[in-house]
Image 1 (cartoon, rainbow, N blue to C red):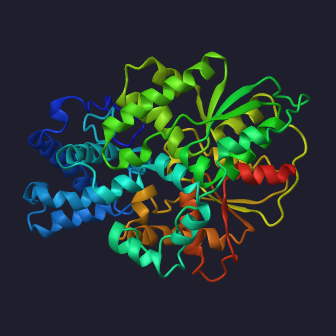
Image 2 (image 1 turned 45 degrees about the vertical axis):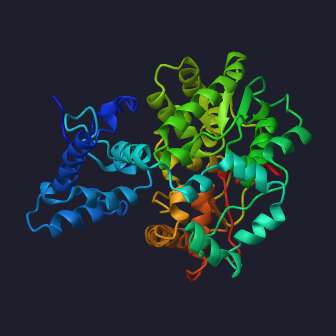
Image 3 (image 1 turned 180 degrees about the vertical axis):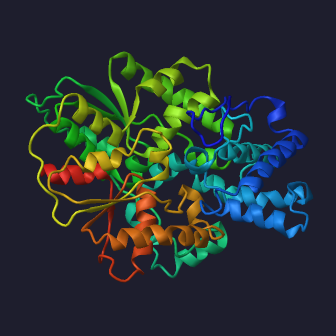
Length: 445
C-alpha cells in the first residue's frame, strides 16, 4: 500500500527522451497539467524556489482555483524559474515514485525544456555560455584579458555583456587560469605516503570543466590530501559532463557526452580505480542522470557504480581505513553551505562529515539553497531571483561568525560570498573554499 510522506525510498524512471511522445505538445501539456494540479493541491514547496509561487499565483489569478483554467503558454514562466536543483523531489514532495501520483517536478521541467529545444533550438548566447570546454580552452590562453573583461567593477564590458548576452552586470563570474588542473597535475604530482592506512587505493580524478579551467585549486588540494592518505591518484578530463546543456534541454548532447566520457574512463575502472568527481553537479550527472538518459550503455552503468563525490571519497577512507595523522585545528571555525547537488546525491552530509574530521574545529552547517543554479543564476532575468533566495542562506552563514566559508559547489559558494559582502558583520574579502581545500590546510599541505 502506498503512503503519503515519502516513507519509501524515492525512485526515478528512465528518461524516455527518444520516444516521440516525450515532446508531443498535447501529451506534454496533459502531463504538465496533471503534475501541476497535484503541486497546486499540496503547496508544500512554496518556499523552495520561485517556480512554485509562480505556479500558485497563476492558478489563483484564474479565479477558479484550478490548473485547467491556466493558459498553456503561461506555464513557461514556471519552467523558466526552475534551477533543476532536485530539492523538491528529494526533500519535500510526498508524491514522488513509487507513490501512484508519480510526481517528478525537475524531470517534468527537463521534459518541457527538451521539447522547447527540439522546436526552437538553444538560444544563441545560451549556447555560447554553456560551451564550457571551448570557453575554458580559449580563455586559458588569455586569462588576464578574460578576467579583466568579466570583473564586476568593469564598467566598460559588463554593461555590454548584459545588453548583448543577457549576463547580469552585477553577477560575480568565474575566473580563468592560464594553467589548467590537468597541466598542473602533470607537473606537480605529490609523493604518495606509503605509511598511510589507505595506501594501495587507486583513483582517477575527473577534473570537471569548472575545476579544470576555473578553480584548479580544488583539484590540487584533492591530489595532496589523497597522496598524504596513501592514494595513488591521477587527473583525467575527457570532457564536460553536460550539466549546462541539460539545463538548456539539449539532452541529445548530454547523451553524447555521457557515452564519450564514460568510454574514456572505462579503462581506469577496469584497472581497479575509483572515479572521484570534484564538483557535486558532475558527480550527480555521472551517478544518477546519465544512467537515466542512456540506460543501456555498459560504460555508463560501470561509471555510475565507480563514481564518488570528492567529499564522499574522503569520508569513505576515514570510515574504512582511517585517515593519515597530521590534522590540526582550523582557528576560527568553518561555516559550511551544503550544496543542493551534494544533497541530491542522497549520500548524506559528506561535506560536513569531512570537515568534522578536523580536530577541535567548530563547524556550522547551513542546509539552504544558495539560489544560484549554475549558468541560470547569472542571467539578467534570474540574478535578482537568485539573490532573493540566497540572502537568507548568506545571512545564516554570516551569523555563524566563522573564519572560513565553505561549499562543495564553487558557484554556489561564490554567489553566497558575494551576497555576504552586503551583510553587516560578514568577514571582509571573504572567499568560499571547497571542504577538501580546508582539509588540506588542516594537514598543512
